[in-house]
Length: 375
Image (cartoon, rainbow, N blue to C red; front, side):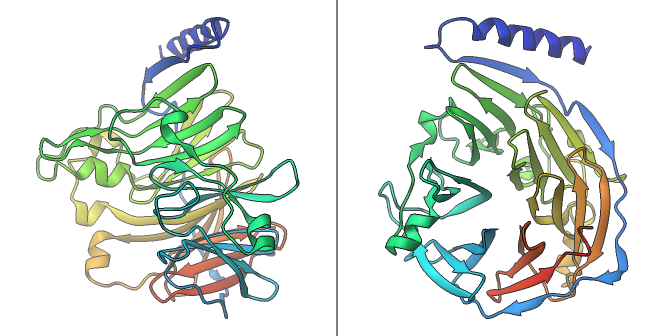
């Protein structure tokens, strides 16, 4: 039944695309993921990855991304929401994105690790805040020793969204094309009415919505539970722009979205609760500090994974994280252990086959050679 409905929806989209280019046709679909793929990751504890601390100092570091021997570090520093570091010298080359309300300022610099080059061959990283998409021109920022935003585009100019809904991530796909993760948030906190999470493909002529979590029940004990769980995820795009992966941080869900086929595959572990079980679970036993960050290549999805439950955290059980490798079909490849030093963020340099890890609390950055792991 779902397949036939999906065909009718696609036919409708084709017919709509032949009409006026001035009107954006919005098509809503309501379904759970098209396919569930159950995997059972195993960690090779005999292969312990080695982390080397780097002499890089960035105040308030909270996220990292890497490209062309440059490390992009987002931070809580109001004077500079991000720093660009040379991995050849381990020195900060420039600080960018000051805090403020102007078009070149950031409330906070967030990134999906999506890089691209403009017509002049300058390196750009797509960053955003709560109000707009603001790609940073890295090449020009380094050359001119300033903060240069390629452009600032308000979310209201990109797609049609509910009023007061600000919790979102936007990925450019091309000219006037975007993929949006609209995370769960509240319409009215007092009445516990919330917007379910959804995925959106926005082109010049249509807005296609994947409402995966429409029927998630509200917990009687904790009305905020759906928002807590479904809004905590990270979005990454395959470099060839054909697929997107949304990795949940509190549930063992890896949602892979095929943009051409408009299909969602959920990769889950055997004991992962289904979405309709949210609100009926013991939080301490079932909710994990699972994946805490990820990065992608044309071939693989790298997931930095914690695995401790909320009870483990309350009992101060030390982190013993692992690095997991999946392909873009959702198949688990391998995993290796990380040392017990505690890390919060990661980024992968495909040219050097090197991963970088960040401990936000101690503001320490580490390097890890993955040449053998990625074979």
